[in-house]
Length: 127
Image (cartoon, rainbow, N blue to C red; front, side, top):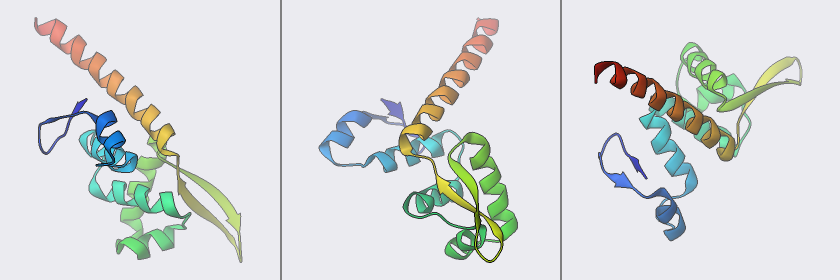
């Protein structure tokens, strides 16, 4: 179970996915938003699930500047949500694709655990 940021209600993810009310991608998106990934990073991750894209394709698809896209991509690469590789067409270029949902989920769990440990340490100092 987890608490959503917007609704502050408990959600049993396993039951929801099993019942077909929410797909795993939607559940991951909700959790990403909860752990401080913005809507644009979530959109980028979503479009890269379906198709590998260059930076230009990402910016055209979302209607954002290349500079903004680079900032989002940098954060996502650092977290491990997406991967980048070089392809040779007329020239060398970077192409981006999303990591499988299973891999992103593992990284999210690690980050959540780290955050919980930090909160525990701070609370123990107060208590």
